[in-house]
Length: 438
View 1: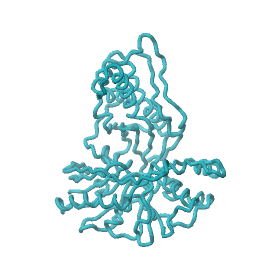
View 2 (view 1 turned 180 degrees about the vertical axis):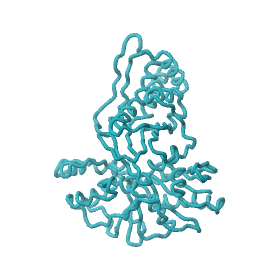
View 3 (view 1 turned 120 degrees about the horizontal axis):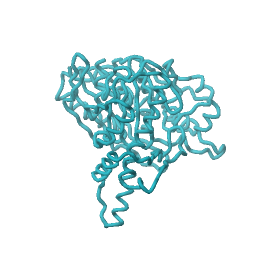
View 4 (view 1 turned 90 degrees about the vertical axis):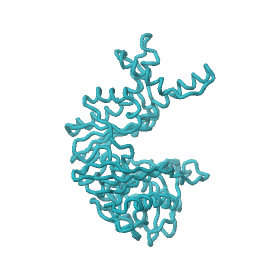
């Protein structure tokens, strides 16, 4: 059967049509990606908002194009950027822009207290959240009288797309998205209303949540299923739904995700709801592939000064990395936490054990790649020790792996298992399509 999947990303909107067989294996028949292009410029440097209605219009164009070509589609599955919220009125229409996951209002210091909202919450509740989480955004807006007067509730942008397609007047939010708002008990699958009452959140109606893949309604005679988080959708599209699977993603940031029935959290490791009552144990690096881009820019700046040409150097870096790997007896170690970590924003990168023998471009290049993987491996060790999980397969996704065979070999060596690259590039949209077939 055929299924349509839509992924509303921060910069792009992607769609796929997949053929799903009886064993739930999927093959992408057609894929389409368009620019999101909906950011709204404001005078606030910390504000990152998008035009919600513009996003919906663009996403519906993609959906309609697919339905015209594949009217026999079994379902329409949805996913997109988590954490962000759009306010809705009692009729289920947006009354605000989309406050995205990148929004920084939670970090702004109050003129009276000298503390940010995040700091105040941490002191009152011993609760650590991040700016951009939906309920952090709402609490700030409430405190500063920025919540539209018509507001009844809120949801993610992909939930809102589901409402617009099916003409629902109230959102139904899957736990994978609800958890991304913050103040959510992942084990009990409910909002932590006691904490919200303690910090005196107003009586805004929290969205209804569900654990199963429920049908929101119909669009052009095709069922539309509840939206899921993009992390969960990406895992489903890249790695499937088999327990004890490890997905290693290397894009601008890096991330490991382990699918399991076990709930486990520790510093730097987050348990996120998955489908069927399972959990994704997730660890993320802030730099990831950005560390390699920084290295390329370092050498590129030198070349521009030396020969007056600004040329891409990734092909040359690839050859240097291979030389560094072939002579990898070097003890140079590169810590690629150039932007800190999720638990220590002030941490910075390091290059250690530099000697007259290893201070070369090839060892530095190899060292950066190894450091990118090591940061993720250290997170995996925490999960392994805390759960005693035995991984049955390791899947790699993201351009970092697809374009760099040395990075793949480093991952296999460090994790001690074979790395299989994900077959599809639009993992999140593919996962969304598959989710409606489960």
